[in-house]
Image 1 (cartoon, one colour):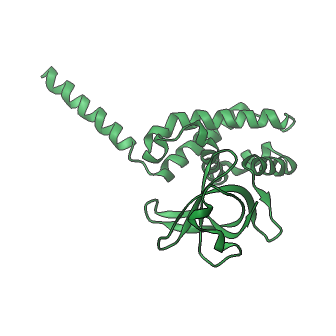
Image 2: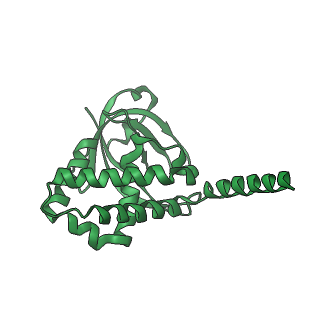
Image 3: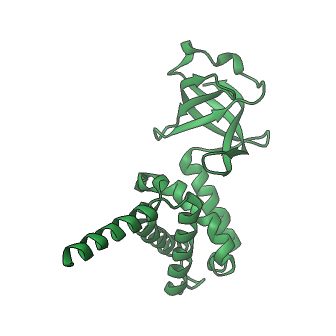
Length: 212
């Protein structure tokens, strides 16, 4: 009888663990956002605190939440600290719908603008005069599918995917002989429906390519 109970317990435990890892990306993001909102509220951060102190507190809450829930989703299970920027964006968007008032009350409007600008500069993005973003990249590969796209790396060795949806200035530079060469790419961000994620995903769409 004891053996049967033990076996049943193991089955239940493994079953629960397996179910936990089958949560969708959206479900896990919501869990992480809820935890981060609670964590920030408990810290009772004063608006008079420095921007660095606020960012540090928020970062610790995000990291704590990520570590607590990452294994509940296949999407986040393989993520590491190197992906925290992407993860932070996912959680931040979800937080707006959960605790926007409390979260936004921590930072002044000037601080929020500074943080956004710092993030863009850290990634190497710059504002473009033709209402887009620009970044210096190394052209790595080109793929001709239903929607063609190029693969590139920035100065931080981070890989970027740029979709090709229309003819653009500099498209003639996209050829194998130019792989490994450096360019300035201008792009815009658009949402496309991802069937695997069952939601709209923001993608980079190239609008201009210039040789450096």
